[in-house]
Length: 133
Length: 100
Length: 130
Image (cartoon, rainbow over all chains, first blue to last red):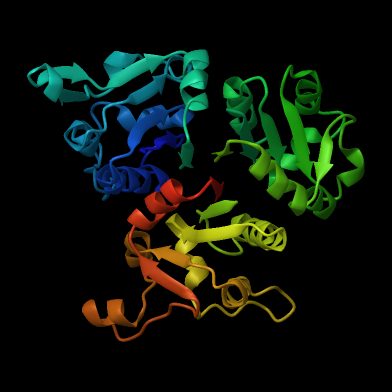
């Protein structure tokens, strides 16, 4: 039976490697056919922002990879509303992440689920394994 | 499903404890270890918040508190455990949520 | 109970590996099984045999090697994280055309799938990081 895996992303990209290496685990983990969710809280929400451009810092811009997650059947992406608001951000500041639902004639659907802190607490409660980055 | 949360940062330099308390459900346990033990010391806002938190149990890893010279300053009502107790807490809860 | 351990930080810089080691020793003494210890991020640096800590300090890598011997632990260093940070075994050194290898006794290098597998197989996954 598939386990419910949640990847907890709490750190901003580039300043440290955690965000990038977390994404690498997600991509590999997708092959294991578990029930995968990603959560972005705190500075983790900065991983998903639009308009990242690393030309001036000599590092690879890995933000486009998040838009490919739908192709890996990773389509439950929880973003904590309070964390966004505290940082002066809204959903419009984040990349548009989508997936195609095979059961509905490949209809394109949103992957990001904007949830309140208490809703996210319920989702986390329901998980079997928490991978923290 | 009861969760064991682990917090290893001082509340003075990091928001991790607050983030954890914001998401921890009633019935869960928070283990403070490494620099997280400072959060449980008397006279701090965090210790006050901890002792008033409803439905959440707190524990401090004794060896970490002792190493930092604060073993005698852990607020009343907060359980102090050794590594055996840490292992038991892991076994007694359904999952471990490490707050990094 | 079957336990998995993930270590995200390198030795000495952070307490993570020390905490994980104390936890692992206590868990084994209590009769729990440790299915795997997975070293990720800078945690891969726990697996170098070339570190020379001062004589009056603990040797973190050696502690893990000894615990591995005693309990036949599976100490896995993530290959993707290891390649970035210059940690390699003999095979990998050959493959990459490097003139040396540095993996410590008792550690093995393998893929990220080993972490996911630990999550699937273990009753609990305990993560030590910063």
